[in-house]
Amino acid sequence: MTTRPQIKVYLETFGCQMNVSDSERVNESLIDAGYQIVRTSDAADVVLFNTCSVREKAENKLYSRIGEIRSSAAEKSTLAEKSTLLYGQPIIGVLGCVAQLEGENLLKHTNKIDFVLGTKAVGRIGRIIADVIETNDAQRYDFPNPDYSDGSEPIFPIQPSPQKQFLDLGERESDYDWRVKPDYRTSKHISYIPIIEGCNK
Image (cartoon, rainbow, N blue to C red; front, side):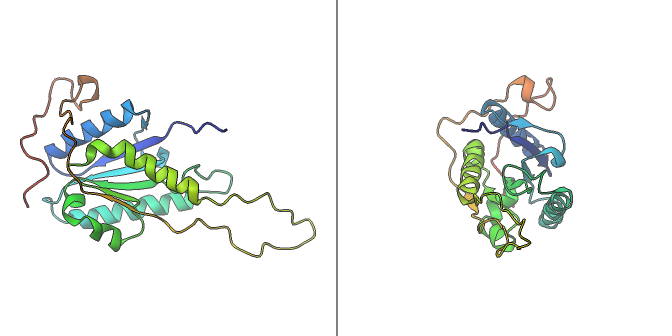
């Protein structure tokens, strides 16, 4: 059985300090679960957007960035270099206030998003990424290497199966730990104390 390389995750944060605080907890959770956090989306198997619904045109910015990520991956991908995850495309997840407020509408708007995770569900981030990866593996075609030495051509295109999207807007676990260890904070000298979950707009 082949061992999967460590999954690389890039997290981009839009908006307020509460989002920064949430992103710190997401990073800590993912690292503790064995994922690797990277600094650029180009290096990532999984790209996460932690969104803010208060800032102007938040959804437009989100869709624009997702389009950029998908286009960049498609341009750079070759048959030999394609990701082990999703045919050269990263898994894309949306977190934060836009995710909580728009939920299923995000998935209906575009098939470029693999999962949406609400503000109270961020503690399950590692689990939902694992679910998406497992689903992608189950949907992957396993064709033998073709032999076209007789001049024949393939009779069907090799394409991924239809995408399955995930949505979790559920409640937070009762034992969820709000604290972030100093090593995972944006600043080791500053620690955010959340007084609200998501936003009220």
